[in-house]
Length: 331
Image 1 (cartoon, rainbow, N blue to C red):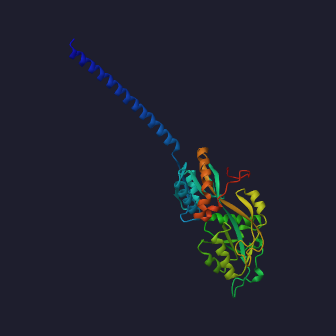
Image 2: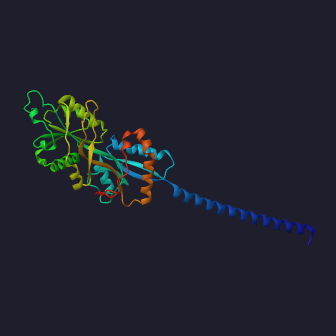
């Protein structure tokens, strides 16, 4: 073999070895990229936020504002849960969507009919029943004089009560209070007023007493009390003395007290504590949601609650449910 042929053979062998090394390197790189991609994909899948749908309404309500602020707070930082608010006409529709499996969470009032698979996650706010009657007569020339002043719930028999809020559950709650106080509910006439009709409520001289259901710092309630006091005389707040019995018979309600001066300082409205009942607005979840997902939502909610309250004061009412109390709705 000539020297030129030997040199050519050596060069070809070296080239083959170099190609094998290059192919091996490319294979290693390809496998490495595949492993990295698979790991990155698994990590993304593991760490990606879960998006929970939450039904709430109506738009513009206190509940809707709180949930929207909550969704914004959840989206501002790297968190494991995101919220997607679903607008509804109110709590009844929100709970119906939950029952139909079209949402993961819903905001509803505790004395509404709950879906069978609903479970309580958090309390959005407590609504207190406030009952009061005017101390003045129904007006000039009216036959309804001071002698007909209402001093207690039992005096509401045969009277007309103006209820703030058009939801039928307020009227149903009033019937519970009346029945527990020995008053036949059918003998009390209920007239509903919108939350923006406090002046009309106060000017309606056919109304003998008034009822509001909301947080104690509710502007609607305080405005209604002030309007009736201005036009009908100082308010007489009616104690629901059977509140504990109501709470025992109807676990969806709680026995509470309205503190003195909560609606006005001078003069004090009320002048002393007043026994009443409350009903909670709740965030409820489907039982089929993974427990770890609900737990993550719960932790995030109470981590951002104070931040939300700075934007929407109503968020300050959010509390943890009482796990030690027997309720109709499981926690």
